[in-house]
Length: 222
Ligand code: SF4
Image (cartoon, rainbow, N blue to C red; front, top):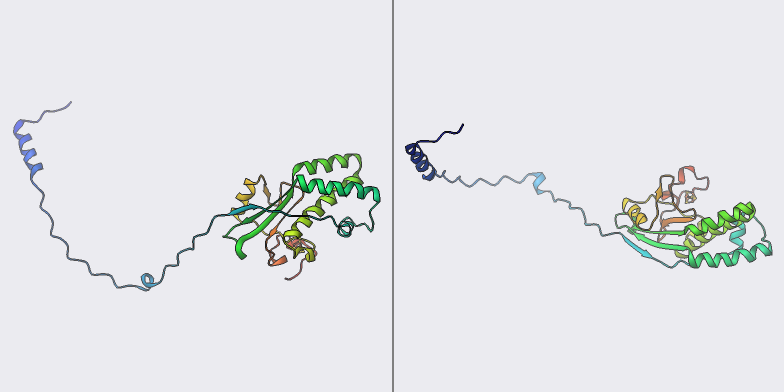
């Protein structure tokens, strides 16, 4: 139930509301606090970190019979096999080889990295050959490894002496860049492509940055 106030009471309330409130005396200006060690210390502002850069690059792998034989554990290649390997090498390089430079300014040493991989059709082709002949499948499998390593050595020449590519832990920014390229990083230290190389570009720090180091029999102190 609502109640209606009498006119006199209303008048009194209106007058009360109209009366300006007393304004409080302005406070005396406060003394500035003495600077303390904390306030005088320079604030170390974080430097702004630039955006991640992803650039397609040209990587030119070269078929090298000596390296291929070494990789395959063979001393020679049959002529017939060589005739199959060489055109495949050129065809894969032209159609399915991908190479990108990813630069994350938040990563050490300028943040440059390279990711190189062969697209899925190469994996399918090798799998198909494997079904018919495991030895031929193994030969093409080794060819694919030779190709991505040779492409990596083309853009990071120091890898040729090393014989392998130090595998750094990707930064969160690089993981995002991988996603944009259709790649998924696995915790085992691989991407979702069977033939791929990820390493720093330019070369730096060797085995000390390689996440395979704890289990690698060839690790050295760089
Ligand atoms: S730890 Fe092993 S795989 Fe990694 S760069 Fe060194 S030798 Fe190569």
